[in-house]
Length: 89
Image (cartoon, rainbow, N blue to C red; front, top):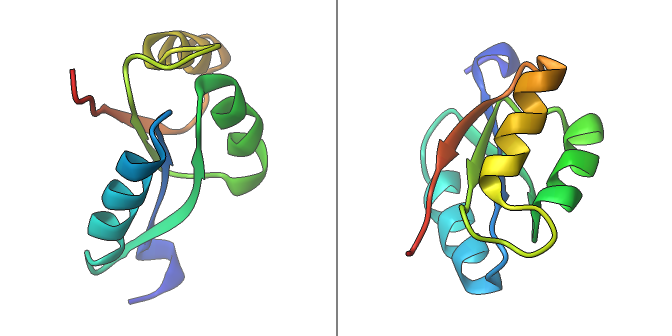
């Protein structure tokens, strides 16, 4: 599969175990590359600039900046990244 068809995903969750599980599951999907992880929304916004993911998996409740706040920021900046809210609430 050409690189242009690879979906670059960043996993954002404050729980290390969930970051690992989600990353491992996504890594098994052909055409998906996990390009990084972040433990909260602030870290995610910082890493998005360099990692340039196509898609985020976002936990809703996280310290410092939650997933909904990340979405608001991305929409305001018109960032070209999709998001899936993924939570264990």
